[in-house]
Length: 131
Image (cartoon, rainbow, N blue to C red):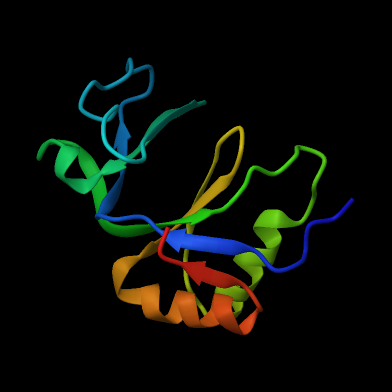
């Protein structure tokens, strides 16, 4: 089963940041609030995605991201969902930061590249909605 057809996406409100806290850090309470947030611990690092306003000034962060939500849910056996979004963005030279949840995926793009990202996704046949 492949999922390479037309997808529906929407832009979440607000500015997001991708931050990094020291390896072995516990869940930063400042991160776990707002519309979209994620904390990922991996060997050698802990990465945080949260609203840009949540990030304390002493934390290493890259603000200025906008989040695109893919309208799911998508069954786990469905393949090609992210590729159908990421390939047009790659071809348009738009960098991304991707997140997956149980039901769907989110793709963050820099705010200044949002018009390019939306145009590339529309050219690829995807629908962009308000919600």
